[in-house]
Image (cartoon, rainbow, N blue to C red; front, side, top):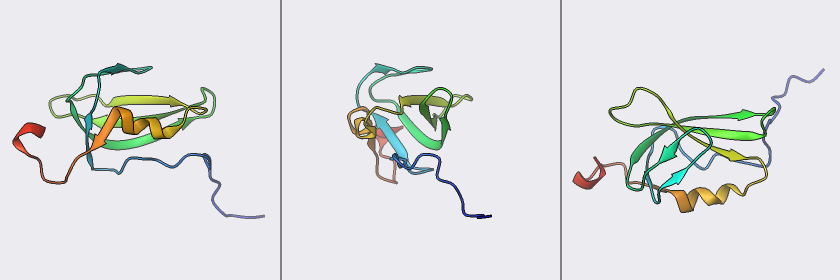
Length: 97
């Protein structure tokens, strides 16, 4: 019996890095959340739902206790993230706050 880990989503790598900041490029509605252009979020985690056929990407936002979640269907190209978010430099500028 093999004890090797099983990859649950071999078709999709997470495009975000934990602890990195991302700016929302355009206002859009997601399955469980709505995002507004200019918001700055910090990536927290991701989770896959085999039942729903989606991956949820969770972000933290200063001043909010709850996580912000962007869900994407399994059959959607993950590269769409680049149209919705942009990764920011590690050092915040006054406009990023």
